[in-house]
Image (cartoon, rainbow, N blue to C red; front, side, top):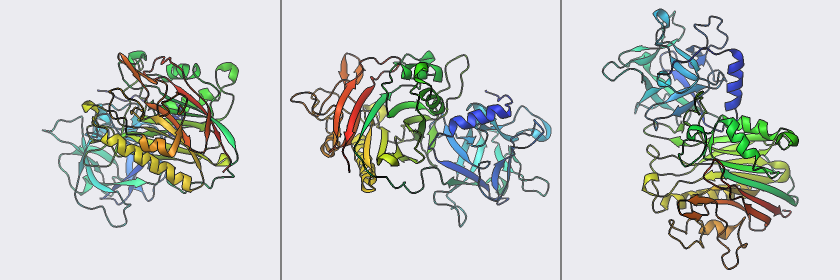
Length: 483
């Protein structure tokens, strides 16, 4: 059991800033009993009541926005407050009127921060946003023989206070979970003139979560280690695609990239954005959580997914879910796109499902679908006037690969419509390339950088040094003609 220690205002602002880089879907809870949105009491002066949850808001702002997280494949859900950056916690260590009170103060997704959702077939009230669901929340800390549900106190003196105290579900225990419009949901910005330009791109699966094939402390990257590994592999990039990345590292990587060159950075302004992978059972998609960080701190590292680093001019980015194997058991994979309107360039990063029965796609059916969906995403931005440069870890070998590592047809259409970084650099085998993944006794290419077919790659290199990852970074310099 992980009880949450008290946290001061400085800690709130730092953690909230770390997660502000995420393209994850935001949500709000509305009490059916009060008709009000659940809000975090940010300005409460009593430290024992600080950041308590109350169903009393008429509209949704930062104090009401939440993200959904799971470390149990959506069987349980944790709610993270946007305004504090911390998880909603049921206070079972307190007594009296405070027993079971919900407060947004949990520093990690422990037992007190997990709730088992009970979804109802009953439709959400008229006027609710599309995708809203009616649910009750059972506290996971309590066993099934003595269930305890979260109530919103709808009495005259209750002020909508949320507390885990009910042994059955009535009107006070039912809520509407509503999706909230997130960044990236608006209109794609108009691109500027498509002048001829050069773009230096790096892509690297950093293997930051908990893979025992990777060399991080306790198999999990802390941001200090991660920054050191990225710094040692920088080649003055304009764009970086990261896969197997932890959400709270995004802001720290941004700060590192912006350091002076003499300190290992680039000396330029950056914007690093993150998009989560999800699990889903009977309810909405829930962000998969990175395993807790290396010991002794065992810090929360946020959600697990992909990230993209672009020049700081970017203000528009969008998460795209990709069709995936049963994502209650396996992960719903994702793509993330970010706009550089001044250059009429859109950059997109994705991580496809893995092959093999253990990962849900032994025959490549899902990866073929993901490649088509990613191609459709790219085509959509092209129709809006953008030149799209895209890539990532596609977990698929190229079409001219002839050894036995799964189907080599997954990317056939992608190669037909676009130019790959390594395409044509190997005589007689244009749709192949340098190894990016050492895998047991063999080595394969599964990491890619693609550009428009009218573009030319003036260089494409792979550094055969995985460092603490299990992938090699790939670099491409692409010359984009005027549009």
